[in-house]
Amino acid sequence: MWKSIASNALSVFIVLLVGLGIAVGWGQSQYTSEGPLETATFFEVPRGASLRVVSQRLEATGAITSPMLFRIGAEYADTASDLKFGSYELPAGASMAEIMDILTAGGPSTFRYVVNYIIRNSGAETRFRERTPGTGEETILAAFAAGEDVPEAYSEAIAAEVPIVYRVSVAEGLSSWQIVEGLKNAEFLTGELIGVPAEGSLAPDTYEVARGTNRGEILQRMEAAQKSILAEAWAARDPEVPLETPEEALILASIVEKETGMPEERGQVASVFTNRLRQGMKLQTDPTVIYGITKGESNGLGRGLRRSELRTRTPYNTYVIPALPPTPIANPGRASIEAALNPDETPYIFFVADGTGGHAFAETIGEHNENVARWREIEAQRNESQ
Image (cartoon, rainbow, N blue to C red; front, side, top):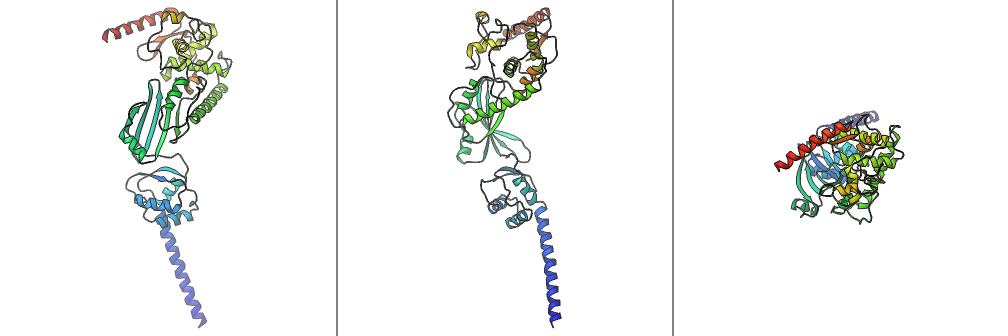
């Protein structure tokens, strides 16, 4: 009798084991197989949200069919406690395992809505964009300059508290005053700014921030970035460049930045000024004279330089002083800093605009005078056509 009972119990146990094995296999298959999401979508993991809350939100989104199975799979994979706060893009057909990998990877958040605040020489502009999941394409929903009325699409999104990533983009070649004034007009930033950072000390770049970020914090990030860039470039400098200190490199880089907007010309422009410094020649560059007049506290003169201004002796008038000006005249980007410290090897000591947005370079004064004559012809033709 006992043998019969034991035999039956063993059979039941084996059946249960087989059933359990089948159930585990089915669960694993469901966890790793293609999910029900028909199109890519954005999904937010709220700060401090539990796995249960996230699984329920995923079901409501249509990304998974079973919150319980999602939680069991996460527990089995030992990732249940690794959820990272943020906004993520879930691809179409993503399995539960793939979704969990995305939500625990800890990479940069991918938001549906993006606000890019652009500070440039002409002023600041806010662009409110929407990303299309699965394609990366972006549509501008609203764009407005500082001081203009805020478009309804933007104000409604703010009122609805939809997840938005904010980015502050600072153009190369702006003065520190221009950057500070631009930050003051960003409605999503907080904190007052007192004073202006040293000229050249801010790294132009795009900085991702949160709504409510303190303006001073952004300036600190920009200063830290510029110090790092300058130190790296100084360590890798051409030992033959006639620059004694990193500060001198920053000064020359700011001049290069203001003299050309064409990336491919930076090395050549830097070579002209390097050659002039080696020969003890005056740099004779208009942007330094302009900075001596404005101190960077404007978006430019709005007119041409007068002859009297070119003759007046100031620390920044490089038509008079045979040296670098005492400070940078703008905030140069990495490429201009690297160009100043590793200029092209050329014989050029002159350059002038060529009418295409670039410059014509010359080794002799005769060649330069010919280039200047051509540029004046272009200017005259343009004036006649206006």
